[in-house]
Length: 245
Image 1: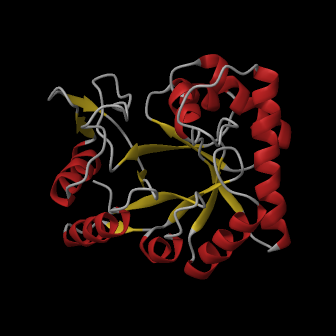
Image 2: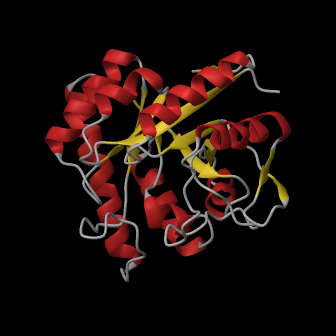
């Protein structure tokens, strides 16, 4: 069983809780203008991450601030490629100015969910990484289309699972339109994560146990309960000998 895991959170999304979250997490995903964020938020959140020794990741999205990047967009592959490339370059420019290092990339919202199952969308993300020649990790769901495609193109991946989301039997996330999409109870979250870490499976919404692998676990920074949930999860995992780093 793993003796340590990474906990990541989405930040720079206008919630304003980054000062609370940074001491508790080990990596962060910074919104870079697609669904949220601008140069100023990217800079301030990056400096907070530096202060707390948190690994910095880019969190590109469909260019859709109106819907917070949570709905699929009718957009051409070329337009999506241009948008993702600009988002990444904007964050990299901010990091370069502060002498900071980009550790990983994690797509946001609908872009993340579609890339897990849609080769066309996944290919756009892979092509941007190849074009920018980024030597960074890609956070991806286990057994997903984008994971397989990244490995084919020698792009290093880190399997990710969600600490605060419920899963369908096919390892897709339960839609946010459903009342049981999010996990709000700290005990339920601990059991959810500990089972994935210790047994490499997840109990789906239908009660099945499905194989899953993950080294990093996401708790959404826009969840109003994020601080309390991460605090409790960290303490409970530590009691089982699992450190956050």
